[in-house]
Every structure is written in structure tokens, then in C-alpha cells.
Amino acid sequence: METPVILVYNENPESIAEYLRGRKCPGRLLTASTPDAARRLIKDVEIVFAWKLPPEVYAQASNLRWIQSMGAGVEDLVVNARIAPSVVMTRIVGQFGAPIAEYVFAEILYRQRNLAEARRLQQARMWQRFPFGSLKGQVIGVAGLGSIGLEIVRRARAFDMHIVGLSRHRHGTEEVDCAYDGTEWGIFVRDLDYLVVTLPLSARTEGVVNGTVFSAMKPTAVVMNVGRGRVIDQHDLIHAVRSGQIAGAVLDVFEEEPLPPDSPLWNLPGVVVTPHISGPSVDAEIGEFFLGNLTRFLQGQFLHGAVDRTLGY
Amino acid sequence: METPVILVYNENPESIAEYLRGRKCPGRLLTASTPDAARRLIKDVEIVFAWKLPPEVYAQASNLRWIQSMGAGVEDLVVNARIAPSVVMTRIVGQFGAPIAEYVFAEILYRQRNLAEARRLQQARMWQRFPFGSLKGQVIGVAGLGSIGLEIVRRARAFDMHIVGLSRHRHGTEEVDCAYDGTEWGIFVRDLDYLVVTLPLSARTEGVVNGTVFSAMKPTAVVMNVGRGRVIDQHDLIHAVRSGQIAGAVLDVFEEEPLPPDSPLWNLPGVVVTPHISGPSVDAEIGEFFLGNLTRFLQGQFLHGAVDRTLGY
Image (cartoon, rainbow over all chains, first blue to last red; front, side, top):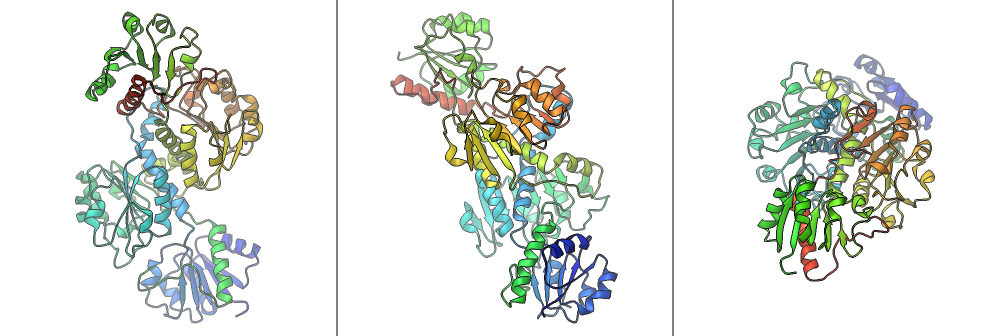
């Protein structure tokens, strides 16, 4: 396989393909931006570098050996039984931590420093002080201590927050002040001012942040989701905010995306909605990640970001 | 001087006096919130704990031995020649770093992550991505590496920014990637994405950030002032923003405060105005600082935050 056939698939595959060509990517690069176009090409494809290629297309990929996801979460691939066990799957790791952590602290500081009120007063040309809070000493809970969660922890440390973590494997727990596992949600959330969910979606995590969890939280607490929408039970979340069980939510991911225009989340007081932007895909960054793995793949070495399909990430 | 006479002076002195009484502050506590009220009391006063007590009141303080400012900047006291050299002056140190650094990063992240656009799109129920930037690799310049500047540096580090410092004494320069002194403004600002001014006001710093400095900056740069208004030449700043020499400014302090309602700064595109709130005075925090110094004063020990009047801080 000296010149493997590589399919690049996402909304705008030419952009990243151009980047890969500029970096002298070994292999024959095909591009597709629709399922139909991908279906016409897939038979010869040995490597897929894609974001959300539909399962039925994979079913026709008889020469497929490796799938590199352009994202950090691969729940769509893992649950797709039609991908042969011999096909290697990898996801992007270590690229989304910085932007997602910046998203989290932009929103926490916006809220704590009451920037909405600051902007309103400026617009009215009013020199008037207003109440705001400090992050120092506030309690942040990070659910999921992978590469994204740990970047959030590092910034929380610089703001002198008290940091609590939840992690299945106790991975990363040495970086937090106090750690719990997935059986301890009730204690984990009890004292939090901010709960930040970075968990991958799997059978184990689907709907794990639900009414029981919200009812254990402080009424002043804010829930943030930068992982996957379905980790939070969205119906229970709306109820929790409406009934005052929690003070609000900052949501970048949802059960259904795009979030339907008639969702009550759009204008629920205390809720921030953003269109799945916390961790942007930068062509150069995910391109470099792929190129590194491609070199390893051609040399028969272990790949970075290999997915354990039984864990789902 | 077993029960010294202490004058507490600010807009609302009863609040902090009550805090001090609750902590069994040794001494006779007097309070005043107007110059007239202070003038009637000042003759017997040995210790002043105040924010902006007018110079003419100090001129009548024949028993004064120590002034504890409630702020970090004491330019009003230092330039007041009527205060005898034998009177000890102290300012608050180490209390304003965390809130001011949070102010700085709230505003930097607001800008980088384009939260104004995010809020606008949510209000319109539009699921639409928008451009934004990352702090990672951006260059922040911190002018003044005292206790406030160093708290900003610590958080900039957690966001993986490149950090340049300007410091008169080379104090704190080991914490930054690159350091300059007060003769090197042109080089210091050349590559900055954000210039954060934390300098005290003195004859040396007044108007030091002026048209010459702005013309050396990148047109994409943003100037932030959390120190004292008159360190920046406000006229030159307005010109620099209007002419596109720099991209904008975040201003918490001004040449004249309150900022007059007809100032062009209120609605200059790219400019954020806040009413001198970056470092709030919390009664408990400045009260504890004073109590610690009072104990040291009564025991004849060196005080914390002692002001060198020749330096102005």
C-alpha cells in the first residue's frame, strides 16, 4: 500500500485536502461532501478521514482499513455495527483542549463579572457600579478528566478555584483537589458552583446527568456541556432550570443538532446556547494530526487516538 | 498610644467601621464620609484609614502618624506636600490582583470568543457558526509587574499566551518570557496583541502610554487599562482607535472619573468602558489588611505596603 486511497469527507473537504496536498501527503486523495458522492467513491477507499460519514456508506467500504475521525467523539462510529472489527478507528486527541477550555472560562467569567450588565450600562452612558463575583474559591466540577478536562483543570487552577473531578479510570485525578468515580454523582455535584461536562457519549454516559443529579445540586449552580448533548437529559435540564433547582446552563451541544428553532432552551433565562463551536476544527491542526498518524500507519506503528470500541472512546 | 484615634473615611465608612468593631479593633474609631465631617474630627486623629480624603483635611491633622490608604494607588497622597515626611503611608498590596486579573481575562475572552455575536445569534434563535480566535500563542504585554501584574501573568500562562513584561526594577521579570524597562516602550509594544497597563500614577508614568506608543503597535492590538487613567494619554488613545492605529481598548480607569457623559469613549467602536470596578474594595479584605498593619504599628514593627514617596508607590 504505497499510495493508499484516502477519502476526505466533511462539509468542505477541498479545504483540508488542499492543506494535505501542500504538505505532500502520501496517497491518492479523494474528496466528498455528500453521502451520494462518498458512496460512488467508497469501494476503493482504504483510509477514511471524515466527520459524520453516514453508516450506510461504511457498509459498502470493502477495502477499508483505517478510519480517522476529524472529531474527539466517535459515538457514531462505535455504535455502527457494520464497520468490521479489523478496521482501526482513531479520534483526534489533544487538539480541542485549549479552545474548549477557553470557551468554558469565557462563559464563566462573562457570568461572574456580569458583563451583560456592564455592556448595558456602557450603552446607556451610565457610570454605575454593579454587583459581580469572583472565581477565587468557587468550586468547579469537571466530569471527564481526559485531555479536554485537564486543560480546563489547568486554567481553573490559575484562577484559584477549588477543583473537583469525576473520572471513570481515576485518570487525571492527581490534578484535582478531590476526585469521584461514575458511581458518586450525588456527592460529586453537591458543592459545585459550576459543573462542566466533557464526557464522551456511550451507553454508560447517555443521560447520566439527569433530574437526580440536578436535584443534588445547589440552586446557584450552573451546568455547562462541552461534550456531547445526549450525556445530559435535556428534558430534565429544562425542568431543573425552570423550577430553580439550578441557576442556569451553558450549552454548546444538544440532543438534536442544530437545536430546533422552537426549543425552549433558546430563550430560557440563565441559559446560554452556542452552535457546537467550543472546539473548532482547524484544518491545519487536524490535518497535522492525520499526517502524523498516516506516517505511523504506513510504517505499521501504533496510531495516536486509537479508539477502544468497548469503551466508546 | 494604647487606644489610638482612628478616622475611617470613604463613601460609606460605617460599613467598614462595623467590620473593624466586630473584629475587636483596638483604638477609638471615628467615621466621616464628607470633607467637612472629616475636618471637624481630624485634629485628634492619629491614624487615617481612608479612600480619597482631600489634601486640605490632611493639612489640619496635627497628630497624624500613619495613613493607610484603602486602595492600591496613592498618587493623591504622594503629591500632597502638606503631609509631613514623618507620617507613614501604606497602601493595600496583594488584595486586588485576583479580581483585576479576572476582569482582564473576562474582557480578553469576551473579545476573542466573540461573545457579543454569540449572544446576538442566540437571541435570534440562529444556529450559525461565527469566527473567533484563541488566546493560545497570542502575545500579552503586562506593563507593571507588581502584585497585580503578576496575577495577570499567572493566568496568561495557563492560557498558553506569550508573555512580555515591562518593569522599572526588573522585579517579577523572571515570571515573563521577555522583559523590558521603562526606556523600551517601542520594542515592548511592537508585537503585542494585548497591552495591559497596571502601572501606578507618578511623575514618571503620567501620559507614558501616548501617541508614540500607539503608533508602534499592531493595528490589531487592544489596550487595556486597569491601573490609573492618567498613565494613558486619553486624547491620543481616542485618536489611535479612531484612526485604526490600534483595534480597540478596554478601560476601567480614566483621566476624569466618573467619565463625563459626553466623552466619545462611551460609544467608540472597539472600546469597552467600565466604572473603575476591576478591583473592588471588599470591607472584609481591606479591613483585615488594616488590622494586620495596626497590630504591627502598635508593636513598632514594619508595616506592609509601605509607600516610598520618591517612587510614588
